[in-house]
Image 1 (cartoon, rainbow, N blue to C red):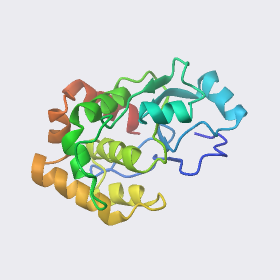
Image 2: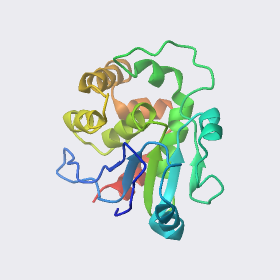
Image 3: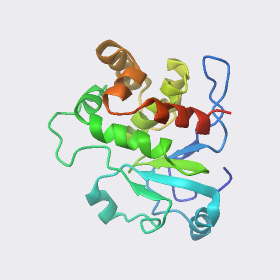
Image 4: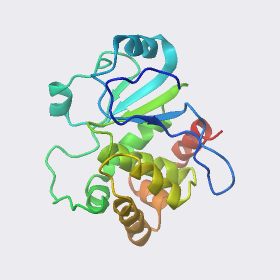
Length: 203
């Protein structure tokens, strides 16, 4: 996806990552980013012209109010807060395990927002494009059968995201739920959503 992302500090195309069966993530199918209110006007217009099929905003409502998305009133936009308004756990510095355990319903909704998107590229973002975005992208890549090392490497490309944090998170998913797909089933994701994600994101 060739767009001018000046103003964003942590955006990239996830395309090109290899999967265990030998496939690749399709270029231009899934973009991850930090908040979009700093995008240049030309990029906003290009997105409105049809370059993007869906924008999934994972931020809290108060973050959206403080830094409104330029797409908030557009058909492509979906506000899908991935964290509860009040967290009932203390986020550790080295794992997203508690986020996965305590926010299952919201995480399942965010996954389905990608699966149910209309044709076109999907943009997933939160405030900094690291934690919430990193977790959702990791889950998507796991469903696509990207190797754990590939999931970790993509996460660690963001500044301030130690690889060990994602390794610990993937280990938590494996030990507590039996892996990413069983975890997502617990959140309410069904077979049709898994199929849709694979169809839209795999080359």
